[in-house]
Length: 333
Image 1 (cartoon, rainbow, N blue to C red):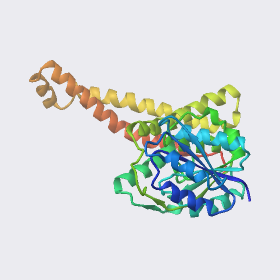
Image 2: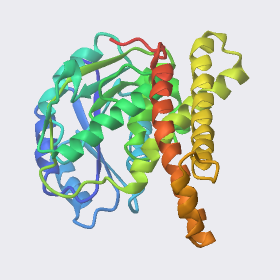
Image 3: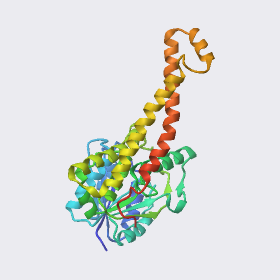
């Protein structure tokens, strides 16, 4: 069996962490590395107590909340230096079932460089404890990221996954820049675009047993912007290196960005024209005459923004279709 390291980032996970680690260590071949971000509840002290009971638990202590992405990068480096074959990402809040580890490793043994535990494989929704709003946000986020990047995976944001050491060394973990849930998007994208096979296995995700979600507006913004940065960044990287095999992918990238620009400018122009005195609806002009200048300008800006959003939504639908078509270079196992 391959030597496997399970990396668990923690912040105030004292209540659930012992159960998670205990379940992992029931199986041979798995070691645990906890990366703690200065938990005020004494999570690191608890891990030190558990370390004295055997040699399969290790700990990295950090001075404060430095983010999910940097925690995993430190864990990856630690594991690669100690020659682990597989490196697993797992949450400490019991959302990820350790009983799924054998299934993930079995899939890894077939040759992929990355296996993702998917909540949405085969058209199912395997999530327990989420309200409709949270589920809708997750599903839309996966659709948005996967289509923008031209990937074919069902759960691009899933945090229960396993990398081979070769895959991590190939993508250059020092180059990873995202730090929230976008980290999962970036790592999967870089593995796939390196031509490394990626697999998915079905899991059941359960809402955290205790504590609070790490979701924030900053994390959401990062996840929204990152796919566009990755797509555009690959275009310039490939141009500099002369990678001609990406020409169809980059043609779709350029077309998509031009369509987006045209949608924004066209929508604004349309909205501005409809809100001037040249509008065929005379009542708008009459209404304008009865308003102070500042009020009319404000209304004109509002109408412009409305029509721009309406027009852009139609353009964005076309952009997603362009981006998604044939963009996946990495093999899907």
